[in-house]
Image 1 (cartoon, rainbow, N blue to C red):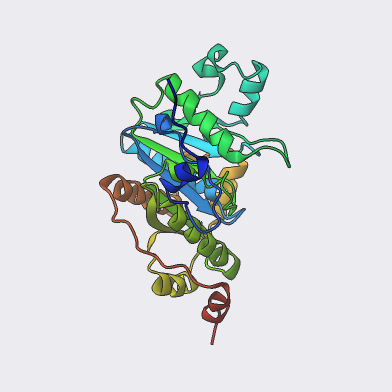
Image 2 (cartoon, rainbow, N blue to C red; image 1 turned 180 degrees about the vertical axis):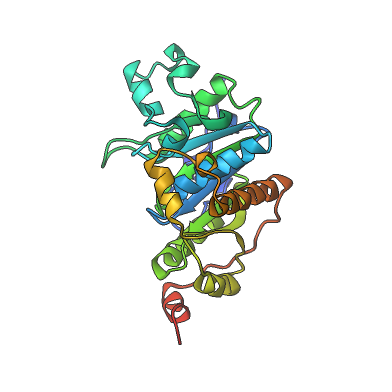
Length: 302
């Protein structure tokens, strides 16, 4: 029997690209996470995404939710305030069994952290080789094979820096809402604008939508407010610049484990409020990113 072959060019036409010039690999439909609410945390490198993600994970757990945090960074330090040490990555453990995933046990790559938050470090390929998208895909595949997503209420992807290439944009293919962590400064907001562009590209073919902004290390938000006003973004939470947050990282602890001073209790309350708001559901934001030159003209003092 003759088999009709469909040209690759025709296959590609069936599904529009994520954006002009995109060479993204579509998500394997068998790797959908399931019924959990999925959030992807992005932001400029060093802005405090891991601190934000870990404290938000604990806040969800304090609301009685079953939480899984997935670190997507070769440094594999997303979850250390939850587990109190650096955990092996999915790539590490796959390599140890010559990539025969059937030989792995759950306890080889999933670790329980503070207040029951389950922690996974996806890791990344060696520097200059491979793709972060492969790592994310393998991590979700393992979690599904071991049925670890069946009873999970919330999944948080903590994603490397402000890299918006296809590999590290891969969590956007799984997420319901993308949240951007920023400070009240030019560099952070410039990076945020690029992330908005990436989320917009992914939203053409996936369910991910912009959820909002988390202002971090910011006692004031005037520059963030300017940007939000022009683009349609909204600030969902504001975490002030407090030394106790730095201390919590040094103690390998979340803010929910620190001495309950008034300032610590206030930040805990902000994270709990944010978790409750996200759990209730937020409307997607229709946001228009700015041109680079326009950001230069917008920000700063007159």
